[in-house]
Image (cartoon, rainbow, N blue to C red):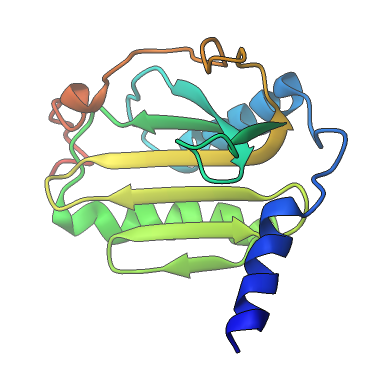
Length: 181
């Protein structure tokens, strides 16, 4: 049994990675922007949203912190956005219903809890979406596209970062006659 586990671990560490990244950064950003627009478009009257924040995380193999950690040339491109308008507990279900209808209409398998929706595509390239309305009335949207061309330097600097560094403080700060009551 130990030999089997050791063989699996060694195989995982040295499994060949794809030579080419699956998706260019621009294509991944366009896909995420389309999802942001669809979520915003699903909610009428409109919610006011902060500027989206984009970032990337380089994919590595091996155990980082040791000499075995190497970049694969692929990365995760992630984006997040929060609604400035506070959503009341009475409107939470309505916002979730509307976003779920949009995602289901696109053929996504949507997982729902009492406060959030989640989509996880296992196809290559992988993609995930998350929309939540938290107890404080903060509506959050997050999207991640995996297997994107890594644009970070050898030391991890660079990458794809755009938008406000911290928009969380702006979440749920505006009272709206429809959504907040």
